[in-house]
Image 1 (cartoon, rainbow, N blue to C red):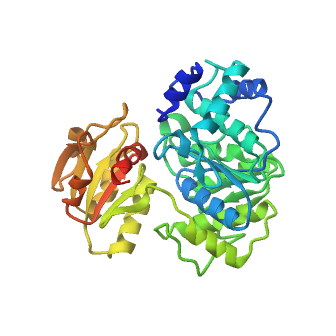
Image 2: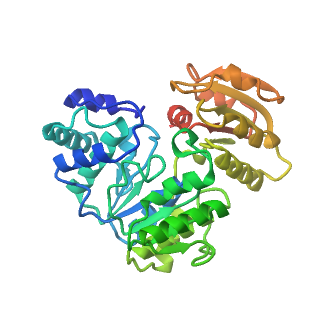
Length: 394
């Protein structure tokens, strides 16, 4: 479910399928009807299990610090679809969205696409209408068959590879790496993060087959030193390195002062975001993200500190492993029921831990509830939960 998509669909009499259909045929047909808005703009295409949002945030902030006008398409929404499509760092307006949806209706693509494909098409139209200097395009899932994989970018970035979306992408690192490596294009630099050996081997194989030159973190480029960012966690140093290397691959000459200025201003809502004193939001929705959260907790509070967790997660995720990873840093856990059709029931999750446990529904919660809870309190799990709960603190 994409928040507020139904508003624009009803307003402009457009339909789309609320499901995942891997493949590019329908997307390519729709884009032909729309006059191929994906052709012409300058893109950096980003795929990866984790780290995509932070890497985009770094690229967006650094590019803007260098005077470039930017566009960004990311997922999922933090509030609604407006913040998934950004121009110069700001969410699009209703007027800008209306223009794109009206154009899609006029082109006759109603019923052709899935929800995410429809939003991707809207993003391409908005970027065509506003013509930013550089656009950061994040794959929604996988890469090879994702609706964003219709562009020829100036650089392709693979941030990380871990087990996630196994029902669609496969049950091994090698299979998932094959999907991510599908964004690599002949002659286009591939900027590759710190990958497990099996994943890196598959990315290298795909790159050789495709004819994409690779620049690999730790081999061809290193961390950008001497910069402290607002984004927490040691892993952010790798995301910053990927961002800088991808921007250089487009021909941008990075000024050291402007690089620092941009990197220090980069921000991602819901990434260890302190929304009240001692209350943090972090969308650790899979095991790799949970491991990163544990490292961040220990860096921030010390190895001996135990935090209080509030967890809501989707049933299709590896929630058992996420809980197991988070338990060593937890004093207590509250499991949350929230408004997502795929949310795992809190009472079921509560049976999976021996920690002091409680359950709560997001319905009826307010800011005052969180002010009374023991601190530090980390609200984590599904990005859908983070999107639902964050407005309480704004």
